[in-house]
Length: 183
Image (tube, rainbow, N blue to C red; front, side):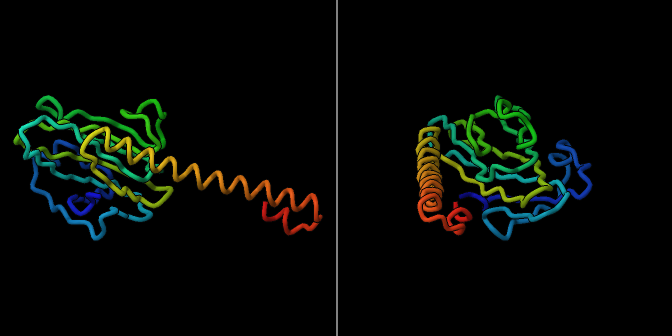
């Protein structure tokens, strides 16, 4: 988890542009939680974080936002000496995502012995704005974590389906309404 390394600005009317973020010295704040929970608000939030590559190799870490119900995300990814804008969120088609996953996932590119700052503009008004950011060292480590998450969810949902059929069976055999409500 890397939420403690983020900084944010609340943009209440959504008029702050990316050029202004880069140009002006704004009052960036540190979050109180590493999960970046902003609650139910109509405000846009600008986030930034810096990644250092101390190694002698070119790295491609994976940034994952572990909250799949984020309405709107603008991710300013620094690639090839310029910022590349990627827009996504649960209001957009799944095909618009850079990496196919239930969470919002972005690949970063960092040259050896450099550091890069990344910017995010986000908003979510229908649910809690909880980003829960994580940085994986490579696509392989991200895939391993995502596979474990999917396996855990599969076991949970499988258990729930078994319980539904079990209670439905008990309702048919015992004819007690309580088992119907449990299924």
